[in-house]
Length: 291
Ligand code: PSU
Ligand code: MN
Image (cartoon, rainbow, N blue to C red):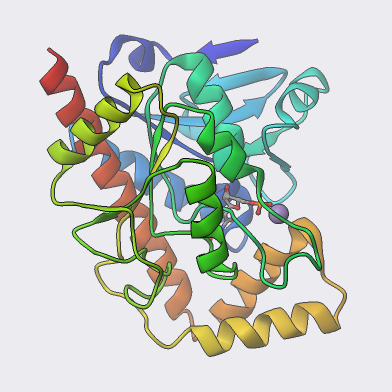
Protein backbone atom coordinates (compact mmCIF):
# COMPACT_ATOMS: atom_id res chain seq x y z
CA UNK A 1 0.00 0.00 0.00
CA UNK A 2 3.03 2.27 0.43
CA UNK A 3 4.94 3.09 -2.76
CA UNK A 4 8.42 4.57 -2.33
CA UNK A 5 10.13 6.13 -5.36
CA UNK A 6 13.43 4.48 -6.31
CA UNK A 7 15.58 7.56 -5.78
CA UNK A 8 14.05 8.05 -2.34
CA UNK A 9 14.81 4.48 -1.38
CA UNK A 10 18.39 4.76 -2.64
CA UNK A 11 19.32 8.11 -1.08
CA UNK A 12 20.76 8.62 2.38
CA UNK A 13 19.58 12.24 2.54
CA UNK A 14 15.83 12.56 2.00
CA UNK A 15 13.47 15.43 2.84
CA UNK A 16 9.73 14.79 3.03
CA UNK A 17 7.35 17.47 1.72
CA UNK A 18 3.62 17.66 2.46
CA UNK A 19 0.79 18.14 -0.04
CA UNK A 20 -1.88 19.98 1.98
CA UNK A 21 -0.16 23.26 1.22
CA UNK A 22 -0.08 22.29 -2.48
CA UNK A 23 -3.80 21.49 -2.63
CA UNK A 24 -5.26 23.95 -0.13
CA UNK A 25 -2.66 26.61 0.69
CA UNK A 26 -2.73 28.62 -2.55
CA UNK A 27 -5.19 29.76 -5.21
CA UNK A 28 -6.11 27.12 -7.83
CA UNK A 29 -3.16 26.12 -9.97
CA UNK A 30 -0.47 27.85 -7.91
CA UNK A 31 0.16 25.26 -5.22
CA UNK A 32 1.79 22.79 -7.60
CA UNK A 33 4.47 25.32 -8.55
CA UNK A 34 5.13 25.92 -4.83
CA UNK A 35 5.55 22.17 -4.33
CA UNK A 36 7.89 21.86 -7.31
CA UNK A 37 9.98 24.80 -6.10
CA UNK A 38 10.35 23.10 -2.70
CA UNK A 39 11.62 20.01 -4.49
CA UNK A 40 14.15 22.11 -6.43
CA UNK A 41 15.37 23.69 -3.19
CA UNK A 42 15.86 20.29 -1.56
CA UNK A 43 17.85 19.13 -4.59
CA UNK A 44 19.92 22.32 -4.62
CA UNK A 45 20.98 21.45 -1.06
CA UNK A 46 22.13 18.04 -2.29
CA UNK A 47 19.25 15.97 -0.90
CA UNK A 48 16.37 14.06 -2.51
CA UNK A 49 12.77 15.33 -2.08
CA UNK A 50 9.98 12.91 -1.20
CA UNK A 51 6.66 14.66 -1.72
CA UNK A 52 4.01 12.59 0.03
CA UNK A 53 0.33 12.06 -0.76
CA UNK A 54 -2.38 9.44 -1.23
CA UNK A 55 -3.23 8.51 -4.82
CA UNK A 56 -5.13 5.65 -6.47
CA UNK A 57 -5.17 3.50 -3.35
CA UNK A 58 -1.52 3.99 -2.51
CA UNK A 59 0.38 6.12 -0.04
CA UNK A 60 3.05 7.56 -2.32
CA UNK A 61 6.48 8.63 -1.04
CA UNK A 62 8.03 10.62 -3.86
CA UNK A 63 5.24 11.83 -6.17
CA UNK A 64 6.16 12.57 -9.78
CA UNK A 65 5.44 16.04 -11.21
CA UNK A 66 2.49 14.62 -13.16
CA UNK A 67 1.10 13.02 -10.03
CA UNK A 68 1.50 16.26 -8.09
CA UNK A 69 -0.80 17.99 -10.63
CA UNK A 70 -3.67 15.93 -9.25
CA UNK A 71 -3.42 17.60 -5.83
CA UNK A 72 -5.92 20.39 -6.40
CA UNK A 73 -8.65 21.87 -4.21
CA UNK A 74 -10.72 18.71 -4.72
CA UNK A 75 -8.20 16.61 -2.79
CA UNK A 76 -9.09 15.46 0.70
CA UNK A 77 -7.10 17.04 3.53
CA UNK A 78 -5.53 14.01 5.15
CA UNK A 79 -4.29 14.02 8.73
CA UNK A 80 -3.05 11.03 10.76
CA UNK A 81 -6.57 9.62 11.27
CA UNK A 82 -7.50 9.90 7.59
CA UNK A 83 -4.66 8.13 5.75
CA UNK A 84 -5.95 4.57 5.81
CA UNK A 85 -9.53 5.32 4.83
CA UNK A 86 -8.40 7.67 2.07
CA UNK A 87 -6.13 5.01 0.59
CA UNK A 88 -8.73 2.24 0.83
CA UNK A 89 -11.33 4.45 -0.88
CA UNK A 90 -8.96 5.40 -3.70
CA UNK A 91 -9.37 9.12 -3.09
CA UNK A 92 -6.74 11.80 -3.69
CA UNK A 93 -5.37 12.68 -0.25
CA UNK A 94 -3.25 15.75 0.46
CA UNK A 95 -1.30 15.06 3.64
CA UNK A 96 -0.97 17.59 6.43
CA UNK A 97 2.24 17.77 8.44
CA UNK A 98 0.75 15.20 10.85
CA UNK A 99 -0.31 12.89 8.03
CA UNK A 100 3.09 13.27 6.38
CA UNK A 101 4.84 12.40 9.66
CA UNK A 102 2.94 9.10 9.87
CA UNK A 103 4.19 8.18 6.40
CA UNK A 104 7.73 9.33 7.19
CA UNK A 105 7.91 6.95 10.09
CA UNK A 106 6.74 4.07 7.90
CA UNK A 107 9.32 5.01 5.23
CA UNK A 108 12.20 5.87 7.59
CA UNK A 109 12.48 9.58 6.67
CA UNK A 110 13.67 11.99 9.36
CA UNK A 111 13.43 15.50 7.85
CA UNK A 112 10.44 17.58 6.77
CA UNK A 113 10.26 21.08 5.31
CA UNK A 114 6.99 23.03 5.33
CA UNK A 115 5.43 26.47 5.84
CA UNK A 116 3.72 26.39 9.22
CA UNK A 117 2.85 23.65 11.69
CA UNK A 118 -0.75 23.30 12.88
CA UNK A 119 -1.50 24.01 16.53
CA UNK A 120 -3.92 25.49 19.04
CA UNK A 121 -6.61 27.70 17.51
CA UNK A 122 -7.27 31.14 18.99
CA UNK A 123 -10.15 31.16 21.42
CA UNK A 124 -9.59 27.58 22.62
CA UNK A 125 -11.74 25.88 23.92
CA UNK A 126 -14.34 27.56 21.70
CA UNK A 127 -13.74 25.86 19.34
CA UNK A 128 -11.76 23.02 20.97
CA UNK A 129 -9.54 22.79 17.87
CA UNK A 130 -5.99 21.56 18.30
CA UNK A 131 -4.17 20.24 15.25
CA UNK A 132 -3.24 16.56 15.15
CA UNK A 133 0.16 17.82 13.95
CA UNK A 134 1.20 18.32 17.58
CA UNK A 135 0.50 14.86 18.97
CA UNK A 136 1.91 13.24 15.85
CA UNK A 137 5.11 15.29 16.05
CA UNK A 138 5.52 14.29 19.69
CA UNK A 139 5.51 10.61 18.80
CA UNK A 140 7.55 10.65 15.58
CA UNK A 141 11.34 10.82 15.39
CA UNK A 142 11.52 13.60 12.83
CA UNK A 143 12.64 17.21 12.63
CA UNK A 144 10.23 19.70 11.05
CA UNK A 145 11.60 22.94 9.61
CA UNK A 146 8.90 25.63 9.48
CA UNK A 147 8.40 29.37 9.89
CA UNK A 148 6.72 28.54 13.20
CA UNK A 149 3.06 27.62 13.30
CA UNK A 150 0.17 28.75 11.10
CA UNK A 151 -0.28 32.50 11.43
CA UNK A 152 -3.93 32.32 12.43
CA UNK A 153 -3.26 30.20 15.55
CA UNK A 154 -2.62 31.01 19.20
CA UNK A 155 1.16 30.78 18.98
CA UNK A 156 2.04 31.04 22.72
CA UNK A 157 -0.55 28.34 23.56
CA UNK A 158 0.86 26.12 20.83
CA UNK A 159 4.40 26.57 22.16
CA UNK A 160 3.19 25.69 25.68
CA UNK A 161 1.50 22.53 24.45
CA UNK A 162 4.63 21.49 22.55
CA UNK A 163 6.58 21.93 25.77
CA UNK A 164 4.07 19.72 27.60
CA UNK A 165 4.49 17.09 24.89
CA UNK A 166 8.27 17.17 25.25
CA UNK A 167 8.89 18.58 21.77
CA UNK A 168 11.96 20.83 21.51
CA UNK A 169 10.93 24.15 19.91
CA UNK A 170 14.15 25.42 18.42
CA UNK A 171 15.13 28.61 16.63
CA UNK A 172 17.39 28.74 13.61
CA UNK A 173 19.72 31.62 14.48
CA UNK A 174 16.90 33.25 16.52
CA UNK A 175 15.83 33.27 20.18
CA UNK A 176 12.08 33.41 19.60
CA UNK A 177 9.73 31.29 17.51
CA UNK A 178 9.04 33.02 14.16
CA UNK A 179 5.44 34.13 13.66
CA UNK A 180 5.14 32.80 10.10
CA UNK A 181 5.13 36.11 8.14
CA UNK A 182 6.77 38.09 10.95
CA UNK A 183 10.19 37.21 12.35
CA UNK A 184 9.94 38.82 15.80
CA UNK A 185 7.51 38.85 18.71
CA UNK A 186 6.98 35.14 19.22
CA UNK A 187 7.45 33.06 22.40
CA UNK A 188 11.00 32.10 23.41
CA UNK A 189 12.46 28.94 21.90
CA UNK A 190 13.84 26.12 24.05
CA UNK A 191 17.15 26.28 22.20
CA UNK A 192 18.90 28.25 19.52
CA UNK A 193 20.83 26.50 16.74
CA UNK A 194 23.36 28.17 14.47
CA UNK A 195 23.88 25.72 11.63
CA UNK A 196 22.50 22.74 9.73
CA UNK A 197 25.22 20.59 11.30
CA UNK A 198 24.15 21.64 14.78
CA UNK A 199 20.51 20.88 13.96
CA UNK A 200 21.41 17.41 12.67
CA UNK A 201 23.44 16.77 15.83
CA UNK A 202 20.67 17.99 18.13
CA UNK A 203 18.13 15.73 16.42
CA UNK A 204 20.37 12.70 16.60
CA UNK A 205 21.08 13.27 20.30
CA UNK A 206 17.35 13.74 21.02
CA UNK A 207 16.56 10.45 19.29
CA UNK A 208 19.37 8.59 21.06
CA UNK A 209 17.62 9.62 24.27
CA UNK A 210 14.36 8.14 23.02
CA UNK A 211 12.82 11.51 22.16
CA UNK A 212 10.33 12.09 19.36
CA UNK A 213 9.90 15.07 17.08
CA UNK A 214 11.61 18.44 17.04
CA UNK A 215 10.40 21.74 15.59
CA UNK A 216 12.97 24.10 14.09
CA UNK A 217 11.65 27.61 13.42
CA UNK A 218 13.36 29.46 10.61
CA UNK A 219 12.32 33.12 10.21
CA UNK A 220 11.55 34.27 6.66
CA UNK A 221 14.37 36.14 4.90
CA UNK A 222 11.98 38.98 4.06
CA UNK A 223 9.49 39.10 6.93
CA UNK A 224 6.20 41.02 6.84
CA UNK A 225 5.64 42.78 10.14
CA UNK A 226 2.19 44.30 9.55
CA UNK A 227 -0.03 41.27 8.88
CA UNK A 228 -1.40 40.63 12.39
CA UNK A 229 -4.28 43.19 12.15
CA UNK A 230 -5.33 41.61 8.85
CA UNK A 231 -5.31 38.16 10.46
CA UNK A 232 -7.65 39.46 13.18
CA UNK A 233 -9.95 40.90 10.51
CA UNK A 234 -9.88 37.69 8.51
CA UNK A 235 -10.76 35.58 11.55
CA UNK A 236 -13.61 37.99 12.34
CA UNK A 237 -14.94 37.69 8.80
CA UNK A 238 -14.68 33.89 8.94
CA UNK A 239 -16.69 33.87 12.18
CA UNK A 240 -19.38 36.20 10.78
CA UNK A 241 -19.75 34.10 7.65
CA UNK A 242 -19.96 30.84 9.57
CA UNK A 243 -16.72 29.47 8.15
CA UNK A 244 -15.44 26.77 10.52
CA UNK A 245 -13.17 23.74 10.85
CA UNK A 246 -10.94 22.81 7.93
CA UNK A 247 -12.33 25.65 5.82
CA UNK A 248 -10.86 28.35 8.09
CA UNK A 249 -7.25 28.21 6.89
CA UNK A 250 -8.02 28.49 3.15
CA UNK A 251 -10.51 31.30 3.89
CA UNK A 252 -8.01 33.26 5.97
CA UNK A 253 -5.15 32.76 3.51
CA UNK A 254 -7.18 34.01 0.56
CA UNK A 255 -8.48 36.96 2.63
CA UNK A 256 -4.89 37.92 3.52
CA UNK A 257 -3.79 37.54 -0.06
CA UNK A 258 -6.56 39.81 -1.31
CA UNK A 259 -6.18 42.46 1.38
CA UNK A 260 -2.37 42.58 1.25
CA UNK A 261 -2.25 42.96 -2.52
CA UNK A 262 -0.57 39.59 -2.90
CA UNK A 263 2.24 40.28 -0.42
CA UNK A 264 1.32 37.48 1.98
CA UNK A 265 1.12 34.96 -0.82
CA UNK A 266 4.58 35.88 -2.09
CA UNK A 267 5.96 35.72 1.44
CA UNK A 268 4.28 32.34 2.00
CA UNK A 269 5.83 30.91 -1.19
CA UNK A 270 9.26 32.24 -0.36
CA UNK A 271 9.35 30.97 3.21
CA UNK A 272 8.24 27.49 2.16
CA UNK A 273 11.14 27.35 -0.33
CA UNK A 274 13.60 28.62 2.28
CA UNK A 275 12.46 26.01 4.79
CA UNK A 276 12.77 23.22 2.21
CA UNK A 277 16.31 24.37 1.47
CA UNK A 278 17.31 24.31 5.14
CA UNK A 279 15.72 20.89 5.64
CA UNK A 280 17.82 19.68 2.69
CA UNK A 281 20.98 21.09 4.23
CA UNK A 282 20.22 19.36 7.53
CA UNK A 283 19.52 16.03 5.78
CA UNK A 284 22.87 16.29 4.00
CA UNK A 285 24.71 17.23 7.20
CA UNK A 286 23.15 14.26 9.01
CA UNK A 287 24.10 11.86 6.21
CA UNK A 288 27.67 13.14 6.19
CA UNK A 289 28.16 12.86 9.93
CA UNK A 290 26.83 9.30 10.02
CA UNK A 291 28.95 8.02 7.12
N1 PSU B 1 0.22 26.40 6.95
C1 PSU B 1 -0.32 27.15 5.97
N2 PSU B 1 -1.30 26.58 5.19
C2 PSU B 1 -1.70 25.28 5.37
C3 PSU B 1 -1.07 24.51 6.39
C4 PSU B 1 -0.14 25.12 7.15
O1 PSU B 1 0.01 28.33 5.80
O2 PSU B 1 -2.57 24.82 4.65
C5 PSU B 1 -1.51 23.08 6.60
C6 PSU B 1 -0.36 22.13 6.97
O3 PSU B 1 -0.45 21.01 6.13
C7 PSU B 1 -0.66 21.74 8.41
C8 PSU B 1 -2.17 21.79 8.40
O4 PSU B 1 -0.18 20.48 8.73
O5 PSU B 1 -2.44 22.98 7.67
C9 PSU B 1 -2.78 21.78 9.78
O6 PSU B 1 -4.14 21.70 9.63
P1 PSU B 1 -5.09 21.42 10.91
O7 PSU B 1 -5.01 22.67 11.75
O8 PSU B 1 -6.46 21.22 10.31
O9 PSU B 1 -4.55 20.22 11.59
MN1 MN C 1 -7.68 22.02 13.16
